[in-house]
Image (cartoon, rainbow, N blue to C red; front, side):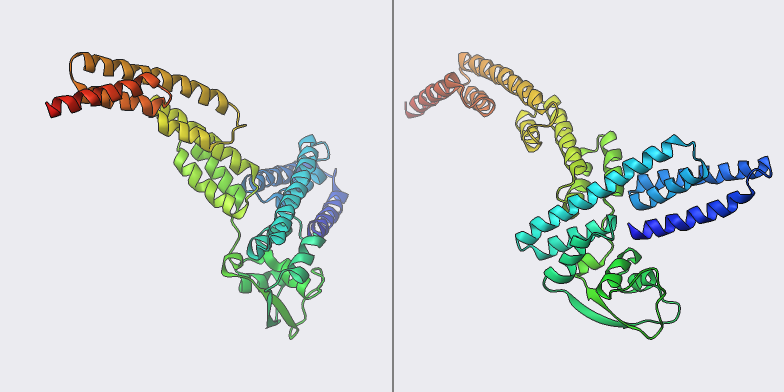
Amino acid sequence: MKKLFILTVLIFCIIIVCSGCAGMSAQRGSAQGSVAARHQQAALNYEKSGDLPRAVLSWKIVAAMDPGNSKAAQRIKSLQKQIISKAEKHFSAGVKYYEKKSVQEARVQFLKTLRYNPDHAEALDYLKNKLPGVYIKMYTVQQKDTLKKIAARVYKDPAKDFLIAYFNDLDSKNPLAPGTTLGFPVLEEKLASKMLDTENELARANKLLKAKKYKSVLHTVEKIIEYDPVNPDAAELANASYYGLGKGLQEKKQFTEALQMYNNADPDYNGIQEAIAGLQDALQEEAEICYRRGVNFFVNEKLTEAIQEWEKTLELNPEHTEAQKNIEKARSILKKLKDA
């Protein structure tokens, strides 16, 4: 990723210059360790917020200042893999949408690809050359303008500076000359607004899950999936919420509703098949309780109540043949009594 590479090189140069005087005093080494600690905390904060490119840059600063920091090297390697994986995941989703002629959805996914990897040539090619409906507006560069400032002005999002650079064949390293006319792609209102920070939303959903606020989790997950249909973490949260809702309903003996929640989850989700099997056993048991209650009403000549209990039996266990037969008998008796 060119931008991160350039920034990293600059930072390393600064560190090398500053470290030329290292060793002159223990105080200087202590200060450098303090700076490394601050950047490590910044890296962790970036990871938490989902800004993986900045997290990598911060970890690289930590590694340069503290070469013995094994955690920095591990995190850089891990995050770089995640960045590549996320970029490719969004790109693949974009291609699928493109093949289905879902232009807007494809564009969303290609933009997300570039969020993680601004140099992704194939995603840029789709956006510039393959997607229809990309309209260009003109802009004249003003004094002190930068690509990020222009992107913030026209897109309300400085992170979309790569679009202006690419559509105008600009090198982001070079300053802009005042008076230069640039063309920038006009995005739909949904795309022109800042993209959903899925990592932040996932963190929020995880907190809601820990608090057992399952319906709120599902509401948050729906937003994530709208922007990122193939997000596995969102799917996992949805499964966990359906499972939790099912358990709660089962404890309240709302068995039919509980089964619906279990069936909404992925059949391969850990524990869901066991939960469904356990619920089916509970359904059978509750059906028998209703059936016996109906028999008791019947014996005491309370035919209407008996029918109601046997109907509940069939709701819980549609294959309960005795309940069906008894309902028919009870209705027949009621009819004869009415006709007598």
